[in-house]
Amino acid sequence: MFNRDNHFKPFESRVWLSSPTMHGPELEYVKEAYETNWMSTVGANINEAERLACEKIGCRYAVALSAGTAALHMAVKLAGVKPGHKVFCSDMTFDATVNPVVYEGGIPVFIDTEYDTWNMDPVALEKAFEIYPDVKVVVTAHLYGTPGKIDEIRAVCDRHGAILIEDAAESLGATYKGKQTGTFGDVSAISFNGNKIITGSSGGMLLTDDKEQAEKVRKWSTQARENAPWYQHEELGYNYRMSNVIAGVVRGQFGYLDEHIAQKKAIYERYKEGLEGLPVKMNPFDASNSEPNFWLSCLLIEEDAMCAQVRGECDVLYRPENGKSCPTEILETLAKYNVEGRPIWKPMHMQPIYRMNGFVTREGNGRAKTNAYIAGGVKGKDGKPLDVGMDIFQRGLCLPSDNKMTAEQQTVIIEIIKGCFE
Image 1 (cartoon, helix red, strand yellow):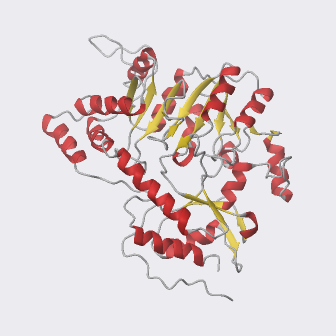
Image 2 (image 1 turned 120 degrees about the vertical axis):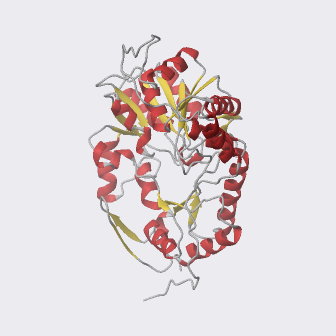
Image 3 (image 1 turned 180 degrees about the vertical axis):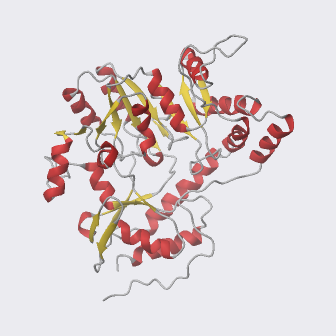
């Protein structure tokens, strides 16, 4: 037996993965909503939060909604998805990217991930159009605040006459070729969930340059009420508008977005430097074209440095081994020291709810490829695993990335991670 005890004491206060960071103006705007009695889904905070979003991101219209998921649902509805329509979706993402397709009766078909940015693979997307030529909507996400190969994805969509919905929930403030994410889709969505780069505790926005689209979403999100002196309804509506109270928090947070990004970037750089020499890599990005918001710093363990790890649906086993580790061991070790980490998003094609849906890799039908990978680690023509998302999920983890974590705390966390490979 060997000892992996780092001899550190657990932190007295929990070090979080990513928690809200408040500054003061948020409370003033919430107080203003309270004192003026504008507590519902109209008010100055909503108007100003929408204006600030447009100013920062560079879109013409922003519609403040109750959640990023609501914004994605409205985007799917705008795109005209109907029951039975197939829609190409990012595979390695949170299920909020995908579920709105199903709300409208659509059928998600998942597009594999690429290693350069951990986002939708444009080569696999092109292959998907060969297999499903009638698809007319694509939903792509920017994972962990890192822009995907959005120009290439956009070009594939344009070649096939497909609408692009951009899920920028995790990437507010990130840029690709100097342009903010949230401006590349025909319609886009951002989130202000409690763990995001800035927060309202909840809330999201639909972004568009099309006035008609914005007006439709404003109507749909207020129960599709018609312009009549009574409650008149001629189409299905939703209770999706953002509260003026929540908007006060968002309004107060916007001024600190760049500060939060700088803090997150410093965390990423400290991990990158501190973990140098270990058989690991940080989540990658294309430095020549993009500047992430560094929302979450992540780790990918080299294949030959992985100890044995087997995951079931809700449980996992691993076997410690000298000089090797795995995501489960690192996460469990961090937890002993009162530190929160998290597994990488489990790819959608591996989720029980979507296990029968189509899945496309850059080499074609992904379901057959996934089975081959599970059976014997079969590699593709480029020598890499056939199922990229599954591989990253197997070897990756999200590191504590809270911007209130001190450099001293992060130094200890780095040493704890190093101890897992001893």
